[in-house]
Length: 145
Image (cartoon, rainbow, N blue to C red):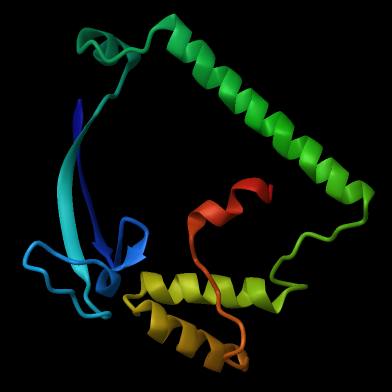
């Protein structure tokens, strides 16, 4: 086993901005609140270690995992093929201002900007107006492959 530190800074909780959630005292945090967190992960280095600790999945679980991965790849390929057949162009940084903005916002968020600051600064840097809001949720990209 090997120990690895995990850490981050949260500006959202449970899918919502911090100023949208009540805390136990009935108050709300400021919109620009950043919550640092850290912990320790005990990682396996070999399958033998997993077996010794009773963490090795059953054959049924392994089969489900592998088949789920194969099915997801096949679905994504079929979806991409259908889009290609219709001539649908996948938005990317070269052909989509929204993609450029979203990627710039993600980089700024990683640099400790608040979501509002990141949006504003990204728009300024890319010379864009404020008419389009950009989401940075990772979940959105699931069906786009």
